[in-house]
Image (tube, rainbow, N blue to C red; front, side):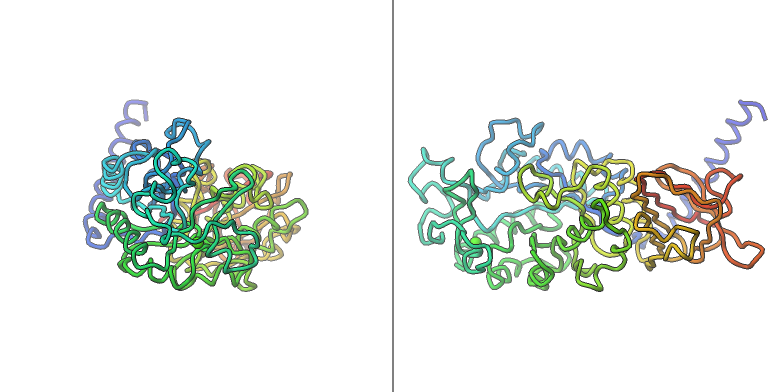
Length: 465
Ligand SMILES: [Ca+2]
């Protein structure tokens, strides 16, 4: 076939396939395809910039976007749209009006509408425990008249910094302070019907704009009884979860079922141990069974979030750059949890492949295959194999060396060929002469077995028949 004919032939094939696809889509258009949720955390991003980014976000496979708190907060010295230096200002509400450093109410509405057109939902981060530090408003009026919504002292707990984090009364009722901020954040009396009403009006306003869900900040600092009141108005079809930085499993689970889901810091701990030098990836086999992760239906999962990203806090939960990608690959390869991917990580090629894998494996079962059943030396602290149904496989190699074996069994996967989603090569499984299944093609038709490079994660999905 000459070049011209080849082009024509390829065009014809494309046309035939497209028409065939159109027929399939046409036949199934009544049932929207079920998709697993992966949340893109548009951390400290201006709303108009997120709107502009929607094509990339959609192409990478994300179907939820979590925005930073959209309420009014102290003015920033940096350009909020290009810098993340004063990100923590966004977690200090001054007023629940939708006019702030990250954009206007119209910018937010435009983002919601444009996202909905693409089938993407928007989650708003809401901060109800406290208000902005009064030092920003000293020139406006005395405390607390400076706060338009809460101008009376009775709306706040007594001004006193949390001193003992083991005392839940203090954690819930005293003010959040930091070494750089001894004045602290005015802590709201979230038990008062008036305060709850203002917070409900704000949530309702966001829902009227089209917001699809909420992330509730700092829930450990609000009593469960108050939280129950706060979430009361949320309709069943909304997605919402609580940011609970649980120091242990019970502390994480304390907020279920007030929230259907909580941030899974138990898993972050478990991941950190497994990926630390000398750690063992096999410790990541079913961590929920030993309470080293929150049950999947209740968990919003990540290797890092904006809190562990931020300089000078949660240093025990920070990962080396390569480990971060591999730990996030695990979060996306496993069945459990709703993954939340931070802006800075969201377009890493391995993480994009993992996000697509997570979506395509929706509803598939999960099995951690023991390396002994695959090949010599595959049962290793550096190697993890997660099968998804009989049509998906994640392999993670955390070693500094390539794992290379010329023969590998693959008892769990169906016979056929699989595409690797990041590197775009084919792996095929077929029966050998002994009646067992083997990987008989790995990239090149000249080799079988497994070859996975140092500090690499691979995601295989079976080709459609
Ligand atoms: Ca509080």
